[in-house]
Image (tube, rainbow over all chains, first blue to last red; front, side, top):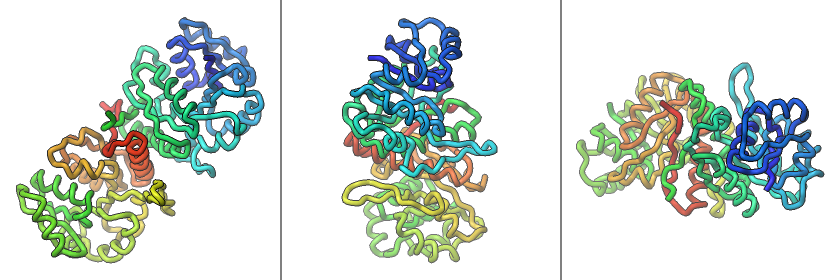
Length: 217
Length: 217
């Protein structure tokens, strides 16, 4: 299975790409500027399989799973570009959170579809399945490969297969348990959880608040 | 300090009243039907101090802290009734979550103020301070006094004093750590977390999903 990480040189994309590669997966980092991305990836150090680099469209066309690791505001243009290039049978993983910072104050962006995940769903070809995942893992910690995350991560999708595949990808990250929560519409609860993590971080002057569910067998 | 639990015979109110009483606090259960409430309370068993019962308005007038343990839909009428009766210096604790179940399907109620907590704030006399807390502790578990909760509970308020007092009340419950998260506007993230807990419960056929923050010192 090839995993394309679109926006793979941002902090979250980099962390995901490196974690997947460390777990032995084939990873293609997609970038608007592949030359610069190649230099960045070369500086990340060795992985069991070398991380490949391509422009976003080529990466998306190669991926069996395509992770959209771009800011929420960049999604619309990206999906217009990538939608027609996706392989039938591939799954798209939305990891975005509709959060904005205005004069340092964090706020959630009002998304007409109810969540960033449903916003993505509405802009993908209907034959492409998608899942929401990786929304609450702190990017700073994801990028520290020596650290186990010790947290849970929620996965939702309207496709059973996409949910199962996304959950398996979540569990490639050391110390993370995937917690499926059903249909994609529940992504709105997870996106608010990221905002809660930011609130905890700011209140307690930490950087890596994350969550564990208590009560699961 | 006297704690009034309005709606104290519902499952959540009962659990809170019993937990506070077990911790040695003076508790007054407020009810629309004090005679029925007295019979209910008598059946709860012994506590270090006997739990008192009064009608809602009398209980609110006695409380140094007033916990609103009623359904979201009952808040408006209740606040009209109680607002003028509250003692100066008392604090109101909103524990409600704007969740509804339509044909078995859970959905969040769209609250104009952004959260149930801000909805309450807008309907209280401005001199009365308030905090949001106890929104994510599972009511079923709260009511089992033999069980430690082993979870975190988020507390927010625009008043430092109310936040500190609400946090102290949260930690009266065995096994619960209070996590302050700043101003009342952040209650919306916590209310979505309750919806996430319900989603986890339904997906995994459990009843008591709750949360721990990882990464706090």
